[in-house]
Amino acid sequence: MRAIELATVTEQVALRVARLEGSGSPEEAYTLASKTFREEMDKVHVSAEVVVFREERPGRGRLVHSEVLSVGDVLGSGGVEVDIAVEPVEGLSLLTKGLAGSVTAVAASPRGTMLRTPDMYMSKLIVGPQARGKIDIDAPVAQNIRAIAEAMGRETSEITVAVLDRERHEGLIEEIRRSGARIQIRPEGDLAPAIAVGLRGADLDAVIGIGGALEGILAAAAIKCLGGEMQARMWPTQRSQVEKLRECGLDDPEQKLTLGDLIRGDEVVFAATGITPGETLEGVKYFRGGARTQTVVMSTNPRMVRFIDTIHVLGPDVRLQGFRR
Image 1: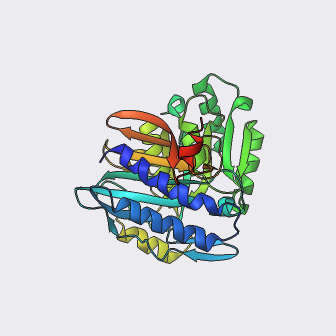
Image 2 (image 1 turned 90 degrees about the vertical axis):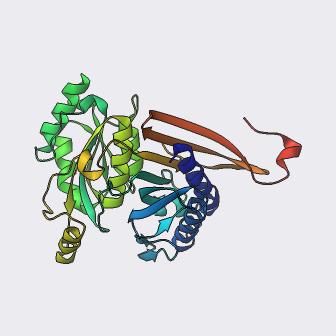
Image 3 (image 1 turned 45 degrees about the horizontal axis):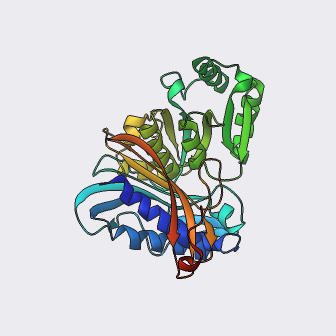
Protein backbone atom coordinates (compact mmCIF):
# COMPACT_ATOMS: atom_id res chain seq x y z
CA MET A 1 0.00 0.00 0.00
CA ARG A 2 1.08 3.58 -0.60
CA ALA A 3 2.38 5.49 2.41
CA ILE A 4 0.41 8.60 1.46
CA GLU A 5 -2.86 6.68 1.93
CA LEU A 6 -2.07 6.11 5.60
CA ALA A 7 -1.16 9.78 5.97
CA THR A 8 -4.61 10.74 4.70
CA VAL A 9 -6.21 8.49 7.31
CA THR A 10 -4.29 9.95 10.27
CA GLU A 11 -4.89 13.49 9.04
CA GLN A 12 -8.65 12.97 9.07
CA VAL A 13 -8.57 11.44 12.55
CA ALA A 14 -6.55 14.38 13.86
CA LEU A 15 -8.81 16.95 12.18
CA ARG A 16 -11.91 15.59 13.87
CA VAL A 17 -10.61 14.71 17.30
CA ALA A 18 -8.50 17.86 17.83
CA ARG A 19 -11.74 19.80 18.31
CA LEU A 20 -12.00 18.01 21.66
CA GLU A 21 -8.73 19.46 22.96
CA GLY A 22 -9.22 20.33 26.63
CA SER A 23 -12.75 18.89 26.60
CA GLY A 24 -12.25 16.61 29.59
CA SER A 25 -14.15 13.90 27.68
CA PRO A 26 -11.83 10.93 27.01
CA GLU A 27 -14.77 8.65 26.17
CA GLU A 28 -16.02 10.96 23.44
CA ALA A 29 -12.52 11.58 22.06
CA TYR A 30 -11.51 7.91 21.90
CA THR A 31 -14.80 6.85 20.35
CA LEU A 32 -14.64 9.61 17.74
CA ALA A 33 -11.02 8.82 16.86
CA SER A 34 -11.68 5.09 16.54
CA LYS A 35 -14.81 5.65 14.45
CA THR A 36 -13.02 8.08 12.14
CA PHE A 37 -10.10 5.71 11.71
CA ARG A 38 -12.43 2.89 10.66
CA GLU A 39 -14.34 5.11 8.24
CA GLU A 40 -11.20 6.45 6.60
CA MET A 41 -9.43 3.08 6.38
CA ASP A 42 -12.47 1.60 4.65
CA LYS A 43 -11.84 4.04 1.78
CA VAL A 44 -8.33 2.65 1.21
CA HIS A 45 -7.79 -0.11 -1.37
CA VAL A 46 -6.32 -2.62 1.07
CA SER A 47 -7.30 -5.58 3.24
CA ALA A 48 -5.90 -4.52 6.61
CA GLU A 49 -6.25 -6.75 9.66
CA VAL A 50 -6.01 -4.98 13.02
CA VAL A 51 -3.45 -7.10 14.88
CA VAL A 52 -2.35 -4.67 17.61
CA PHE A 53 -4.80 -2.26 19.25
CA ARG A 54 -5.67 -1.17 22.78
CA GLU A 55 -9.41 -1.63 23.08
CA GLU A 56 -9.44 -0.02 26.52
CA ARG A 57 -7.66 3.09 27.71
CA PRO A 58 -7.63 4.86 31.09
CA GLY A 59 -9.67 8.04 31.26
CA ARG A 60 -10.82 10.04 34.29
CA GLY A 61 -9.99 7.21 36.65
CA ARG A 62 -11.75 4.47 34.70
CA LEU A 63 -11.33 2.52 31.49
CA VAL A 64 -12.55 3.96 28.21
CA HIS A 65 -13.60 1.20 25.81
CA SER A 66 -13.54 1.47 22.02
CA GLU A 67 -16.89 0.20 20.77
CA VAL A 68 -16.17 0.63 17.06
CA LEU A 69 -12.74 -0.96 16.56
CA SER A 70 -11.17 -4.16 17.86
CA VAL A 71 -8.37 -6.64 17.25
CA GLY A 72 -9.23 -8.97 14.37
CA ASP A 73 -11.24 -6.43 12.42
CA VAL A 74 -10.41 -6.31 8.71
CA LEU A 75 -10.56 -2.80 7.30
CA GLY A 76 -10.28 -1.39 3.81
CA SER A 77 -12.11 -1.83 0.51
CA GLY A 78 -10.06 -4.89 -0.48
CA GLY A 79 -6.65 -5.36 -2.01
CA VAL A 80 -3.17 -6.16 -0.74
CA GLU A 81 -3.28 -7.98 2.60
CA VAL A 82 -1.49 -6.25 5.48
CA ASP A 83 -1.25 -6.24 9.26
CA ILE A 84 -1.85 -2.91 10.98
CA ALA A 85 -1.16 -1.51 14.44
CA VAL A 86 -3.58 1.29 15.31
CA GLU A 87 -3.29 4.12 17.82
CA PRO A 88 -6.30 6.42 17.37
CA VAL A 89 -4.99 8.74 20.10
CA GLU A 90 -1.69 8.39 21.88
CA GLY A 91 -1.81 10.74 24.82
CA LEU A 92 -5.57 10.62 25.38
CA SER A 93 -5.35 12.50 28.68
CA LEU A 94 -2.95 15.01 27.09
CA LEU A 95 -5.58 15.75 24.45
CA THR A 96 -8.54 16.03 26.80
CA LYS A 97 -6.54 18.19 29.26
CA GLY A 98 -5.28 20.46 26.49
CA LEU A 99 -1.64 19.44 26.92
CA ALA A 100 1.09 19.00 24.30
CA GLY A 101 2.19 15.72 22.77
CA SER A 102 -0.87 13.78 21.58
CA VAL A 103 -0.73 12.12 18.15
CA THR A 104 -2.65 9.63 16.04
CA ALA A 105 -0.63 6.88 14.35
CA VAL A 106 -0.79 3.69 12.30
CA ALA A 107 1.74 1.20 10.97
CA ALA A 108 1.32 -1.45 8.27
CA SER A 109 3.37 -4.43 7.09
CA PRO A 110 2.60 -7.49 4.92
CA ARG A 111 0.09 -9.95 6.42
CA GLY A 112 1.66 -12.19 9.04
CA THR A 113 4.81 -10.11 9.65
CA MET A 114 3.75 -7.99 12.63
CA LEU A 115 4.12 -9.45 16.13
CA ARG A 116 0.71 -10.01 17.62
CA THR A 117 0.69 -9.01 21.26
CA PRO A 118 -2.06 -8.81 23.85
CA ASP A 119 -2.84 -5.49 25.52
CA MET A 120 -0.04 -5.44 28.09
CA TYR A 121 3.24 -3.80 29.02
CA MET A 122 6.53 -3.98 27.15
CA SER A 123 10.01 -3.00 28.33
CA LYS A 124 11.78 -0.94 25.64
CA LEU A 125 15.19 0.42 24.76
CA ILE A 126 15.14 2.65 21.67
CA VAL A 127 17.99 4.58 20.02
CA GLY A 128 18.67 6.32 16.74
CA PRO A 129 20.90 5.26 13.83
CA GLN A 130 24.18 6.45 15.38
CA ALA A 131 23.86 4.07 18.34
CA ARG A 132 22.61 1.10 16.33
CA GLY A 133 24.43 -2.08 17.30
CA LYS A 134 25.72 -0.55 20.55
CA ILE A 135 22.88 -1.32 22.97
CA ASP A 136 21.77 -4.34 24.98
CA ILE A 137 18.53 -4.34 26.98
CA ASP A 138 20.10 -6.91 29.33
CA ALA A 139 23.01 -4.61 30.21
CA PRO A 140 22.91 -2.08 33.08
CA VAL A 141 21.34 1.25 32.21
CA ALA A 142 24.56 3.18 32.83
CA GLN A 143 26.43 0.88 30.44
CA ASN A 144 23.91 1.50 27.69
CA ILE A 145 24.05 5.24 28.21
CA ARG A 146 27.86 5.21 28.03
CA ALA A 147 27.65 3.16 24.83
CA ILE A 148 25.17 5.61 23.31
CA ALA A 149 27.37 8.56 24.27
CA GLU A 150 30.49 6.94 22.78
CA ALA A 151 28.65 6.10 19.56
CA MET A 152 27.55 9.71 19.22
CA GLY A 153 30.92 11.19 20.19
CA ARG A 154 29.52 12.86 23.32
CA GLU A 155 29.82 12.88 27.10
CA THR A 156 27.12 11.07 29.07
CA SER A 157 25.97 14.45 30.40
CA GLU A 158 25.12 15.38 26.80
CA ILE A 159 22.73 12.42 26.36
CA THR A 160 19.00 12.92 26.97
CA VAL A 161 16.71 10.00 27.80
CA ALA A 162 12.89 9.96 27.75
CA VAL A 163 11.15 8.02 30.53
CA LEU A 164 7.45 7.81 31.40
CA ASP A 165 6.47 9.29 34.76
CA ARG A 166 5.38 6.09 36.51
CA GLU A 167 6.05 4.63 39.95
CA ARG A 168 7.57 1.56 38.31
CA HIS A 169 10.31 3.78 36.90
CA GLU A 170 11.54 5.31 40.17
CA GLY A 171 14.57 3.01 40.29
CA LEU A 172 15.26 3.45 36.57
CA ILE A 173 15.19 7.23 36.87
CA GLU A 174 17.71 7.11 39.73
CA GLU A 175 19.99 4.89 37.65
CA ILE A 176 19.87 7.32 34.75
CA ARG A 177 20.60 10.23 37.07
CA ARG A 178 23.60 8.44 38.55
CA SER A 179 24.92 7.83 35.03
CA GLY A 180 25.06 11.60 34.50
CA ALA A 181 22.59 11.69 31.60
CA ARG A 182 19.74 14.15 31.34
CA ILE A 183 16.14 12.96 31.62
CA GLN A 184 12.84 14.05 30.15
CA ILE A 185 10.18 12.60 32.43
CA ARG A 186 7.01 12.35 30.34
CA PRO A 187 3.47 12.32 31.76
CA GLU A 188 2.15 10.10 28.96
CA GLY A 189 3.09 8.64 25.59
CA ASP A 190 6.36 7.03 24.51
CA LEU A 191 5.65 6.82 20.77
CA ALA A 192 6.25 10.49 19.97
CA PRO A 193 9.63 10.39 21.79
CA ALA A 194 10.56 7.26 19.84
CA ILE A 195 9.97 9.11 16.56
CA ALA A 196 12.10 12.01 17.81
CA VAL A 197 14.94 9.67 18.80
CA GLY A 198 15.15 8.34 15.25
CA LEU A 199 15.45 11.79 13.68
CA ARG A 200 18.87 13.39 13.38
CA GLY A 201 19.14 16.68 15.22
CA ALA A 202 16.35 15.90 17.70
CA ASP A 203 16.69 16.73 21.39
CA LEU A 204 16.30 13.09 22.48
CA ASP A 205 18.83 10.28 22.25
CA ALA A 206 17.05 7.29 23.81
CA VAL A 207 13.75 6.02 25.14
CA ILE A 208 14.01 3.62 28.07
CA GLY A 209 11.35 2.00 30.24
CA ILE A 210 8.10 0.10 30.37
CA GLY A 211 5.11 1.22 28.30
CA GLY A 212 2.33 -0.21 26.20
CA ALA A 213 3.01 -3.07 23.79
CA LEU A 214 0.96 -1.29 21.09
CA GLU A 215 3.19 1.76 21.27
CA GLY A 216 6.14 -0.62 21.14
CA ILE A 217 5.05 -2.12 17.82
CA LEU A 218 4.37 1.33 16.38
CA ALA A 219 7.76 2.55 17.61
CA ALA A 220 9.39 -0.49 16.00
CA ALA A 221 7.79 0.43 12.66
CA ALA A 222 9.04 4.02 12.89
CA ILE A 223 12.53 3.04 14.04
CA LYS A 224 12.79 0.44 11.28
CA CYS A 225 12.07 3.18 8.73
CA LEU A 226 14.47 5.61 10.41
CA GLY A 227 17.38 3.16 10.64
CA GLY A 228 17.66 3.10 14.43
CA GLU A 229 17.55 0.16 16.81
CA MET A 230 15.05 -1.12 19.33
CA GLN A 231 15.18 -4.00 21.78
CA ALA A 232 12.22 -5.04 23.90
CA ARG A 233 10.86 -7.62 26.28
CA MET A 234 7.24 -8.32 27.14
CA TRP A 235 6.29 -7.38 30.70
CA PRO A 236 3.35 -9.52 31.84
CA THR A 237 1.79 -8.63 35.18
CA GLN A 238 -0.72 -11.51 35.29
CA ARG A 239 -0.54 -15.22 34.58
CA SER A 240 -3.35 -14.81 32.04
CA GLN A 241 -1.10 -12.48 30.02
CA VAL A 242 1.58 -15.18 29.84
CA GLU A 243 -1.04 -17.54 28.41
CA LYS A 244 -2.14 -14.92 25.90
CA LEU A 245 1.46 -14.46 24.81
CA ARG A 246 1.69 -18.19 24.13
CA GLU A 247 -1.51 -18.00 22.10
CA CYS A 248 0.16 -15.26 20.06
CA GLY A 249 3.13 -17.54 19.40
CA LEU A 250 5.53 -16.12 21.99
CA ASP A 251 6.30 -19.13 24.18
CA ASP A 252 9.03 -17.44 26.21
CA PRO A 253 7.78 -14.21 27.83
CA GLU A 254 11.38 -13.40 28.80
CA GLN A 255 12.62 -13.47 25.20
CA LYS A 256 14.69 -10.49 24.13
CA LEU A 257 12.91 -9.04 21.11
CA THR A 258 14.72 -7.25 18.30
CA LEU A 259 13.30 -5.13 15.50
CA GLY A 260 13.21 -8.27 13.35
CA ASP A 261 11.08 -10.03 15.97
CA LEU A 262 8.64 -7.14 16.33
CA ILE A 263 8.18 -6.67 12.58
CA ARG A 264 9.64 -9.31 10.28
CA GLY A 265 10.89 -8.50 6.81
CA ASP A 266 11.82 -5.24 5.15
CA GLU A 267 8.40 -3.87 4.23
CA VAL A 268 6.78 -1.41 6.63
CA VAL A 269 4.89 1.87 6.38
CA PHE A 270 4.25 4.28 9.25
CA ALA A 271 2.23 7.50 9.53
CA ALA A 272 1.48 9.86 12.40
CA THR A 273 -0.29 13.21 12.61
CA GLY A 274 -0.01 15.66 15.47
CA ILE A 275 -3.21 16.40 17.39
CA THR A 276 -1.85 18.79 20.03
CA PRO A 277 1.54 20.53 19.59
CA GLY A 278 4.66 18.42 20.14
CA GLU A 279 8.41 18.53 19.60
CA THR A 280 8.27 16.50 16.38
CA LEU A 281 4.82 17.30 15.00
CA GLU A 282 2.72 20.45 15.25
CA GLY A 283 -0.84 20.05 16.44
CA VAL A 284 -3.95 20.81 14.40
CA LYS A 285 -4.44 24.54 13.84
CA TYR A 286 -7.95 25.68 12.94
CA PHE A 287 -8.87 28.87 11.14
CA ARG A 288 -12.10 30.20 9.64
CA GLY A 289 -13.15 27.65 7.03
CA GLY A 290 -10.20 25.31 7.36
CA ALA A 291 -7.37 23.77 9.33
CA ARG A 292 -3.69 22.92 9.06
CA THR A 293 -2.07 19.59 9.97
CA GLN A 294 1.45 18.24 10.15
CA THR A 295 2.10 14.58 9.41
CA VAL A 296 5.17 12.39 9.18
CA VAL A 297 5.00 9.38 6.89
CA MET A 298 7.78 6.83 6.44
CA SER A 299 8.49 3.62 4.59
CA THR A 300 11.33 1.16 4.17
CA ASN A 301 10.71 0.46 0.48
CA PRO A 302 11.31 2.98 -0.85
CA ARG A 303 13.24 4.23 2.19
CA MET A 304 11.93 7.70 2.83
CA VAL A 305 10.72 10.07 5.54
CA ARG A 306 8.33 12.79 4.46
CA PHE A 307 6.85 15.61 6.52
CA ILE A 308 3.55 16.80 5.11
CA ASP A 309 2.20 20.23 6.00
CA THR A 310 -1.39 20.35 4.76
CA ILE A 311 -4.09 23.00 4.64
CA HIS A 312 -7.59 21.47 4.62
CA VAL A 313 -10.66 23.30 3.33
CA LEU A 314 -13.45 22.53 5.80
CA GLY A 315 -15.96 25.19 4.87
CA PRO A 316 -16.85 27.85 2.29
CA ASP A 317 -15.37 30.80 4.20
CA VAL A 318 -11.83 29.99 3.11
CA ARG A 319 -12.76 30.97 -0.45
CA LEU A 320 -13.35 34.51 0.73
CA GLN A 321 -10.29 34.79 2.97
CA GLY A 322 -7.79 32.78 0.95
CA PHE A 323 -5.33 30.22 2.24
CA ARG A 324 -3.14 30.93 5.21
CA ARG A 325 0.58 30.30 5.02
